[in-house]
Length: 196
Image 1 (cartoon, helix red, strand yellow):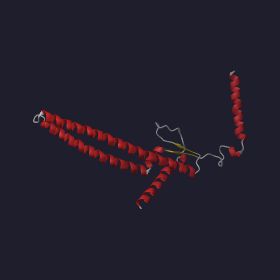
Image 2 (spheres, rainbow, N blue to C red):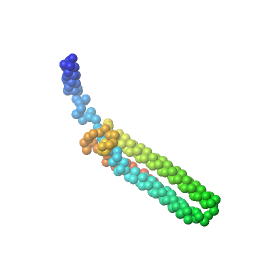
Image 3 (cartoon, helix red, strand yellow):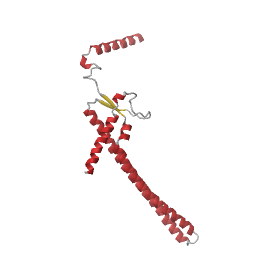
Image 4 (tube, rainbow, N blue to C red):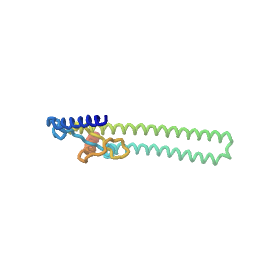
């Protein structure tokens, strides 16, 4: 039974070999006219090289720092209020102390809620920015693929923990810098149009 399987496997291999060598030249793998054009792009490198990404995330960081400064100022004021309240504990009537302590605790609770609200606002803004950047990068890859007649463009992230299926590629296939250049040229045109 094993020899029968080996013989039929060998017959299939021979048939495939004969078929490959007897196909017309237009279907041969090495024929330049019918060869597939394949490229790879390191998505992480494109993202890092995209000037709009740096500008938008820089603006987002500035906004976060401003909001954090406001929260920090309010925290310092609450710390001072707590210290004053602690210092006055023995000199205030119990009801007055309890009222001021409850007022201080309400302010702390309000500040925590405001801090969470601001964090959610920053998270939503960050998500919107990241989505726009991903769309820009995808669009640039589509544009370059169509413009330069690529049949296939793969993500070739060099991070060993990434989910890329590209295990090896020649440097001649790497379109990463082309995509970065395209994105930055489009972005510069956008910025020039906005500044007019």
